[in-house]
Image (cartoon, rainbow, N blue to C red; front, side, top):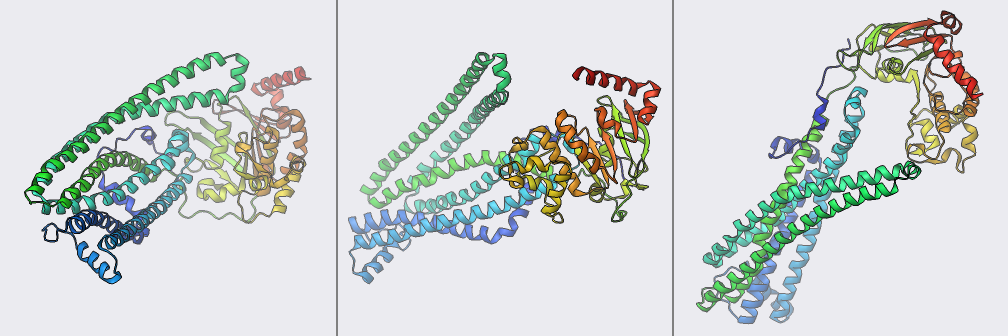
Length: 623
């Protein structure tokens, strides 16, 4: 048995999640999508270790081999050279090159290893991350595609798009940054070990600067977070103002608002400039401070290192090595500070993504759905239907009526009377109680929604155009529909005429929302789409409301053919459409007010008579 929709807190999708805490459970769930690419991740880790080790050894070649061994001639130093002096001597013996050229060969070889390993590390890491997040985005899209209409009634589409685009991109930045951190900290620890083995005192002096760098980075990130937020808000305000004015440019020019709009945009532009200046000033101060610390570190190395060289406690190459290793001490700390902000933002993004993935709201499907025959008769019955989109706010209040196979029922009523709601229930876009809506005497809650919707063709007033050609928008990817069948449907509803006049005919690509078609042409295309699907029940939800009189006359013949041998429900305001119906149902405030033939309802001189007279008066005035 189907259950009524459960009350859910959809406002959760509007909540701003902080992500201020490292959520290991979230990271564990994320690994599910990366697991199929674990070989690439392992290879990436090995490659970054190789590249990091090569980066350290390259500095050893410069300081210990080139300076101490070749220039100074010091071969007795206790300072570790990681076997580079012996390797240089071996190259010298094998090739007959001078020690200087031999050291150059070794350095070039290490540089090649560093470059190739670093490149393939980035390639394999990014490939694994991109593939994993592609799968995550695909699963997220598949999940969102199956959420019911009740979900999208309450959750802004913009929030959902942010989940699929910006939030997934934030995860990419986090995972890529974590891979980069490995490449930064491996040299950090290797360099630290070598530095301690060379000079404990000088190493401790330099390490004293590391907490200063860390604290500076921390306070900069705290201050910049608010500044960057204000920058993003100012940019958003600029974009919103630009979009609003350019999309409504005709109204702007008709009302002479150009001057006022320029003043508003100038104000927003100045605010953006002010926030950008704050961001630039903050970054400049932070960069200058870090440069000062680097200069201080170099001064300390030269001051204390020169003394140890004079006392022969340290070699000249060792001093040079310390200057080369200093960036390996400071850079990882700065990078870590940057990545922590990325990490926390990604935690919030991950929470939003998994919140969407875990949202289990859906239309309840029967465990053992009733199988409909290949062709149904098309009888429709509503029995004492009570329904509301929100609890304690009913839209339909005891609505009952039936449509016999092949009959046409027109439903009229004021806006908000519940006309479109009847159609949504017939298509099972919402959950409702059993024993209320029937198709061929079968409770629609006992039918699978996919099977039901193939039997009920709906033409909405707001006809949606997909990207692709005109033929694509008729076929809609149905593998069982041939182009010949789609073209035949277009001919039946008189859409073939305007399509054949287009430069590419049925292969004409459509712009966003079908902007290169008129409203009437889009509606004709909608009729062709439904007819090509060949449903037994046809629903026209004010489908001709926006069509001009000439186009409406053009499709009347097509409509008659479209409704042949089909049960049809016509929700319309136009008199000509209503008069085609066998019966007319008048709704008022969610209740059946009147029901009968066109002539019977006119004779009652009730609500339908009033609506008829108002429209007839409009028709006479137009004439």
